[in-house]
Image (tube, rainbow, N blue to C red; front, side, top):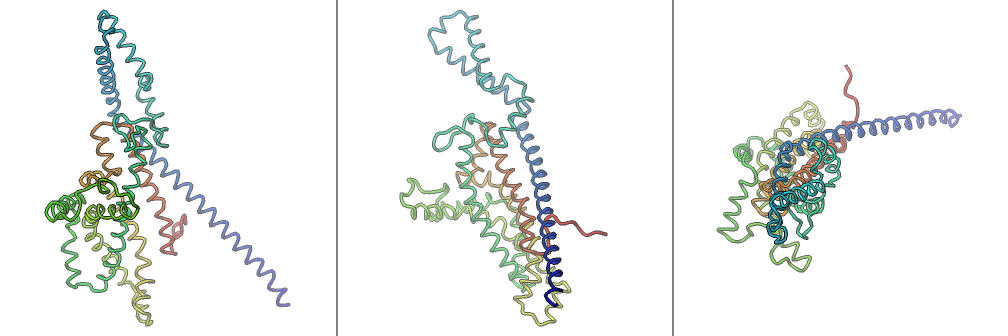
Length: 380
C-alpha cells in the first residue's frame, strides 16, 4: 500500500520538476536572446557612429580623392610618352584614370549609401585592405592586421587584470578584518594616486628601471633578435611584461582595495553576520558564506567597469611601452587616418565590451545563488 500511495506522488513531483526545469530553460533562452539583440543593436549604432566620425562625415573621401589625383598626375608626369600629349588630352587622361580608380574603390557612390554597406562589412571585420598600415608579415588585409595585434593585448591586460583582481581581493578582505590599522590608513592615503593613468606610472618606471638601473628593457614584447627556444621566448616575454603590468597594477590597486574593503565592511555589519557569530560559526565560514559571497556581485561589477577603463587606456600605455598590441595599432591608425583599421579596432573593442557585459549576469549567478539569470524582480 505504501508503494502504491507513493507512486502517484513521485510521478507528480517528477512532473513538477520537469516543468520547473523547462520554465527555467525557457526563461534563460528568452533572456539570452533579448540580451544579445540589445547588445547587438548597441554595437551596430556605436560602429556606425565610428564610421561617420572616422570619415569626418565624408570629408576623408575628399582627402583620398586629392591623394588619388595627385598620385595619378605624378605617374603621368613621369611617363615620357604621356608628357608629349597635349595638355587637354593629358588632363582628360588623368580625369579618366581618376574616375576608374574611384569606381574601383567604390567612391563613385554617395558616402551615406556606402556607409551602410561599410557597416555590414565592418561587423564581420571584412574591411578589405588598409590604406597605409601593414601587418608584420607584410599583409595589408585589415582583419589580419588586427588579429595579429589582438593576442599581445590579451596577454598583457589579461595577466595584469588577474594579478590586480586577486591581489585586491585578498588585501581588501584582510584590511576589513583590521579596520583602522596602520595599513588600512595607508591604503586610504594612497587611494588618490590611482587618479593617474597607467601610462603615467609607466614613464617613471621606464626612467627608474630601464634608464637608471638598466635592469629591465625600455619596451617591446621580446628581445631582438627573437630567442630561438620556447623557454627563451617565454622568459623574454615575461621580462618585457614586468614594467607595463606593474604600471597597470599601480594605477588601479589602491583605489580598488579601498572600494572593495568598504564593501566588505558594509556587509560585515549586517544583522545576519552578527547572528552567525552568535551561533558560534568560525570566522572563516562567516567570511566565506556571509560576507564574501553576497559582496562578489558588487566586486565583479566594479572590476568589469575597471577593465573597460583599462582597455581604453591601452592606446597610450602600449604606445609608451612600444607594445605591439591593439592600443598602439589604434594610435598609429588615428595618426595616419587609416579609416578601415580604425573601424576594425572599434568593432573589436565593441565586441570585447559586449562580451564583458553579457557574461556579467551569468557570473553573478555563479558567485551568488540568490541571483537568478533572467528572473523577474520582486513584485509589489
